[in-house]
Length: 408
Ligand code: TTP
Image 1 (cartoon, rainbow, N blue to C red):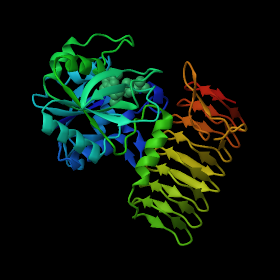
Image 2 (image 1 turned 120 degrees about the horizontal axis):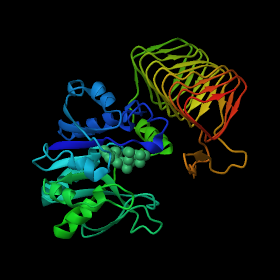
Image 3 (image 1 turned 45 degrees about the vertical axis):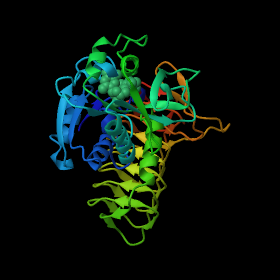
């Protein structure tokens, strides 16, 4: 069986992290998100994988090439107009003449969930949609079913059909293309795969399968932190880098070859340290700290539950909690990121046209690529700082900061 991964989307809700990087390449749980999906496919003996690219397409193609480094055979299709998930799948019409697995590039596809999905297809020979139970289905496509047959799907509604949602994991038969051609534009102005599936369900059975293994969708920064902690919770410890005498390592820690942990560093796993990282001396890394290549963490720095992308330096007297920091940033000595409100209420995140409850009491900042801060600058909880911004010495930053801003 082949697989199709939908990786073309703009990832607007994850801006500024997706300003230069496509969502599936964001670093989560020790590797780019898409690499977790490709591993799960490989574990199900699916090695013929087609990736649909669009936004920042060349970054994905250049990074994975023909897939030989991962032991899979990768081909790419380009989605020219990003008009929705149905138009995305339709782009693969010339490539998929047999039943195929289809995965939204922003959902975690575990080995077990994929295996359940494929078994249901093998048992029924019908299109299959994986569904997953969530506490609140109002921000997803909720699903109703009877005896494993799909009855209805209702997109984002305050009155969801059930607590079960479309997981973004499917097996489609080539018949799906007939229904994709008939899919109308939705009221959101997109061609949506859920409309296609409903149409298919009216003419023939679409089966649903309950998925019970870990699942997460990385639509928002909060989701990215959740995915990171979920993936790091099951990570196998492995120390291949240099650890100087006097460093303390507790719990599950990965230190890749080519990384250095200096004396006096105190590490409480799960922690992921990629090659080229230079850590300490005398810093405190707390659980769910995930560092991409060539990150520098210096003296008297504390980091917890945060993703720090490649080439970023956090060199002296900094606190970073519950935050995501893009590539090639530099925090000046003493820059601190707040992650808790005085009133203890949930932190709000400042998106383009609204202020959204992060549903977290502790949430720091989301910072785009190439942001620099001066000494003793302060970043308020829930701030979203776009790429190429400069924050001057002693400045206080809060809310949403546009690309290339100068806060002096
Ligand atoms: P969405 O999360 O609906 O869209 P998006 O990824 O662009 O993110 P945002 O809403 O924040 O802008 O997409 C679900 C999946 O489908 C995701 O893996 C990307 C993929 N997709 C495409 O491949 N092509 C498309 O035209 C769209 C809209 C999504």
